[in-house]
Image 1 (cartoon, helix red, strand yellow):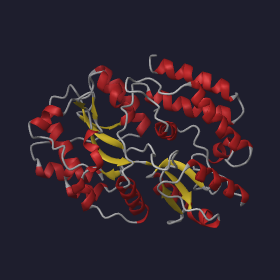
Image 2: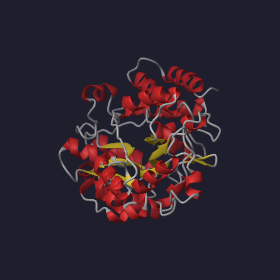
Image 3: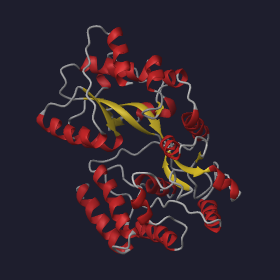
Image 4: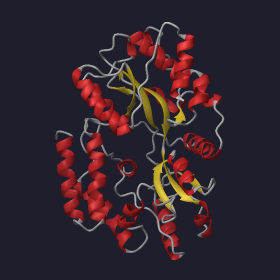
Length: 372
């Protein structure tokens, strides 16, 4: 898909040649760290929110603002305020190519059986009652205790957030202790699937494997889960439960195209990014491969089917409900903190350490990663 899109760009810009390189996500970032420190990073690359501030603060990212001023990059026509998603401290370090938001992905048949239809404005009490009903029918759900983005939304509903604007943890030990104890109790009483089962079937998800009937995840995961279950229409999307029936804390998280600060071709970089996010034909080629298309031109050009259509309809409902908020820029060290939360929770879920021990360890590792 990328090669086909690049071919279109080169056809319209005959003086610019693009040489693509492809790698798995983790392998790319390992290589990129070496390239960036050595002064030889790619002119253009796909970026993620977790690395935006990290490499921006290290002066690795090209501030594209000047290219907008020169007319080489158009930042108009983006969905739901996404034009600001790659802007940090007044600098444009990335341009979104696609976006997704968080959701509850659930088994339609199981929820019909318990008489629950999750929808906008439902509460955590509603969710807890639904999980109780699932248990009564012999079903279980997946605990989100180790998922950083889920906990961030829960905190945002309470007027807090996972990271503060200045890049520190935005919650205390008491907050995480209460959350983890509640989730661990769900494993003990049989409402949530044990961690041991999740380990046994990995990398397949508990939901798609049939061991769970609901899982909190980014909405685009419904494509993967449907494919793993080999059954379209088996799953549906619901917004996050709320504390007050209104505020979900949700935001659109994006993948970006960024430029290298030391590139010798800033104008060409900007023109390439502009083409990749605005050209309708590129939108048709890429589809929702990197999330729901970020600009109106590409969004209108692509006609989704199957799970992709469900994602588009879900995001339209969420946007119309007015619950989408700005995303807090993620600090340098976010990737380390995210991995620590998941790893330490899994140790707690296995009974290798108590909740209190796990919380202490997490705060120690997180504060070190964030330079607290």
